[in-house]
Image (tube, rainbow, N blue to C red):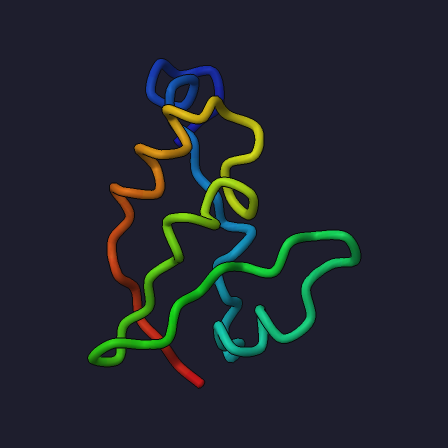
Length: 83
């Protein structure tokens, strides 16, 4: 997607928390950046992860209003786990 296109202007994507090839979620959360809140990842259920809705805003949506952060927390989907 090229920047400046209508879709690019309205899309928000976050890859900062996506593991690189050969990296795992466990490795990503083991050593958060100094001063950064630890990702509020709940224990895996059936091999899938979910973020704690109550702590979601502080870790992933601190730059948006409370209503949007609440929507973001409630609309997340479970994702894969590789130790």
